[in-house]
Image 1 (tube, one colour):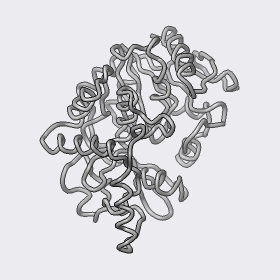
Image 2 (image 1 turned 90 degrees about the horizontal axis):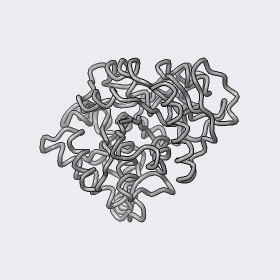
Image 3 (image 1 turned 135 degrees about the vertical axis):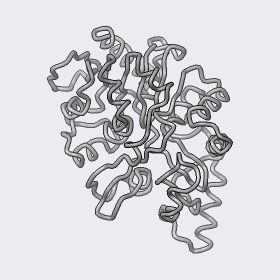
Image 4 (image 1 turned 45 degrees about the horizontal axis):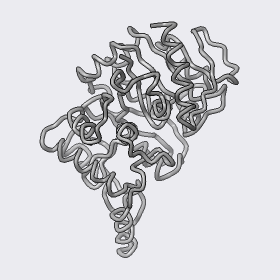
Amino acid sequence: MTTFLAGGTGTPKLLAGADAVFAPTETTVVGNTGDDVEIAGHLVSPDLDTQLFLDGGVLDRETWWGIADDGGTTHEHLHDLAESAGLDTEPRYLPPEAQTAGRDIARWRRFSGVAEFMYIGDADRAVHLTRTGLVDEGYTLTEATRVLCDAFDVERTLLPMSDDPVATMIHTPDGPMHFQEWWVARGGDPRVEDVEFRGAETATVTPAVADALDAPVVIGPSNPVTSLGPMLALDEFRAALDSTPVVAVSPFVGDRVFSGPAAKLMAATGRDPSTAGVADTYPFADAFVLDDEDPTDLDRPVVRTDTTLDTSDDSERVARAVRAALDEVA
């Protein structure tokens, strides 16, 4: 068995064509939940859902978000209503007292449904409503995720990093805001002063995650700060990585990042935005997969390949490099 840590699109892209190397029935994916939000009372788990939809064969591979060919009737009507009523269409948080009321899993990240700032398709919304209904019936997030995997005939084991709330908060000159507001609604502005994983000090890993971390672990080319950071902020999670083989795929080529806000967030949190900075952030990693053109020298085993992940063939190539790195350290 092999366990993959997933946040954003890095690990799903790595696994998208990797079945010949890492069979779904022999792999587990632990997904970041720091990016989760509650909008209009329903729970959205973006990183879990990208892997869920990929393995379920319905992912929109143009955006790597949501369900392919999904309509957006409800989303469009929400915006039409807000415009007609003259309502502010900026991200609208529920009042402070509501942020810690209701279901615990949504603490500190509750948004109004007025002119929802995140595009949610109609079929995608049905997934979120089902997840929310199950949680309200008493299911844990882990149990609700298993039900959704069954509904999509997913063979791979998909686990949230915790059943407790951990919210990724970006501190800016304009005040703290949830990562989704900062990245989705504001496009990575304003300037980042710090990143907080609110709730991490009391959150725990589930028994299922603890078992998964006993296996060799692969960290895909994800953002080290906001995709992996919420997991690493859990003491039990971080400690488990010290005692199991870990291979990481760098999201950089030297100091050039493939995509997303990783460079900006690493610099803002005092890390060098580069492969060398990723290695410093992951002292528990026993080996790395780096791009052929990455000039970085590391003090750990390195397997090199073209780490581009645009096609299924790319995924298989990088997966074989990951397998070779695991064979060196496992």
